[in-house]
Length: 315
Image (cartoon, rainbow, N blue to C red):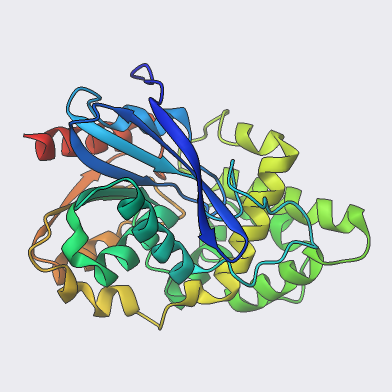
């Protein structure tokens, strides 16, 4: 892995609704502007995200989306107010951050949930997007949800699915699973709430790739990270990302003229490459790159293709 570079600027941006979003910049202040959208939606940005660009040629902007990482207030327990935490608030936050940093247009890079947010942002503000690099494309359609959270992926990981579904034995399909976990996360017994967080994290770690990775669940060992990740994930998935069914694919025409690279791993169980392939068919300016990797990561085959794409756009 390339050694990360350190930020030369950082801060907290007041975006309204009682939220302050953490941002940082690194690389070349005179370089091509780019923004990184992390996954989750509650994972937060990491130093590894900075390594996806050539720091000599890019002005790299990273942020922690509402409720996670170093943004405030942090979502940690069942009492957190999530009423102002939704996709379109995050899209507005990106516009505020772009204007705050004096950037006219930027390259948008995102993976998994970050690809969802990147597409929503680019379709809402195409004039502000110079290019896109998206990995492990997630369109948040009901069929996509049912694949991962409605027993589709259980065909590959039956033992992990048994543990994940055990707290919600009556749930059928992703929508019922999301509602069941929402109830578990708001149970008056903290042991039930903690058990739900642990079960969700174990399923996420198990399904990152068809190839076992002993390090897959390391981030979830931090209880604060795990609580934020699960609570925001369930919140967003229960609401379908505040997107109309098939909205991101239906509105792909709004991306006309924006060059894009879509990176998919054939070993990705969480977001199978079908979604990226369908998006590439609807978006002629996007190029699909297929690797043998798994779900998006800052290391491995998918990350190598992300770096190759940002290098090409820097020219």
